[in-house]
Length: 272
Image (cartoon, rainbow, N blue to C red):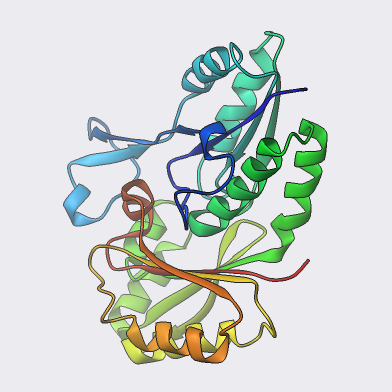
C-alpha cells in the first residue's frame, strides 16, 4: 500500500488537534527574520523589527528528501499563491526533486481554517489508505466549497504588500472606513467598507446567511481582538446555523503576522 503524507505551511489553522491522519501531516514553517533590507514583507507593530519569510525552495527540497525516506507520495497543500510565493517555492523544489517519492503541489486558493480543513480532508484519506491520485481528486473537489471573509484594518500594510493601491489605503484611512475582503480565486477582493465594528460583524453575519446549510464555520482573530468582541457574531452563527460544525480560534502567529493583530477572519465550508 502506497504511503502518503501531507505537507502544509504554518498559516494553516487546524480546527481540531486530533483529526484522523494527524501523524501524516508535516509543516513547512514561515519564519520571522530581522529586517535587513528595504522591501521586506510589512508586519504589524509587534513584528515591526522583523519580516515574514516564506519557506524557500531549498527548505522544501530538504523536507521532500526527509519525508521520502518514509513515504512514497508527498501532497503539498499551501496557502493561496496570490497571498505568498510559497506555492511557487514548493513547485520549484518539486521540479528538481528526483527521489523515488512522487510530489504533488496544489494551490489551495485559501489559507487559515480553509487550508486547515483541506489538510484534515487529505490526512483522513491518507490514513484510510487512499492512493495519492484519489486524495488529490478529493481535495480538488473540496477547494471550491470553501469561502473566506476577512476584516483587515491595516490597509497601509496591504498596500505595501501589493494587495491594494496605496491611494486606496490613504483615502480609506482618512475616511475612517473599515475594509472587508473575500478570497476570490485566492486573491483578496474588497467586498465592502463600513464605519463601525458593529457594522463589520453585521457584514460577516450577512455573508454567512447567504449559505443555506453550511457544513463547517470557523471564526478566528488576531491577538488585538477578544472573544468578547466577537461574541455577537458567535451567537449568530450558533443560533442561525446550529447544524454547522463551529469553532473559534486565535490566528496562528505567522498568519497573524500576515493579516494583522486586529484582523478577524471567517471560513465557511458548504456542501459540494
